[in-house]
Length: 111
Image 1: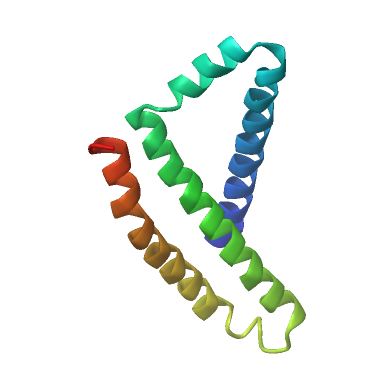
Image 2: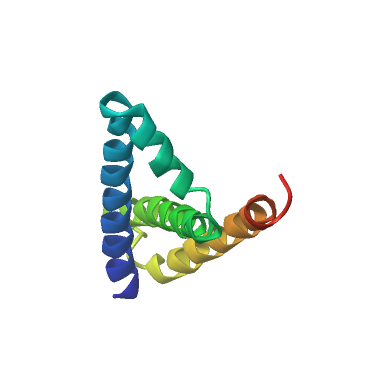
């Protein structure tokens, strides 16, 4: 149940991110000055932490999507769906553990 909810939540968050990304990128054609101001607001520690959430959402959503495909389209998928969920969580955490030190040093450390 929780994987179902989290898959939908991360999907909506990714959709909203992509919408904002398309809109702020489109600003460069309207007003390069406004575009530069908007991009400047993204270079804050709060947005850096938001990027961590974005990467976590992408990782979980992608890996859980593969799990859903395996559950739906393989004969043994339903039997192992819980194990596969733990694998998805483990891979997501492992990938984040590799991403976080470098990213957080860029966000909070010297560039």
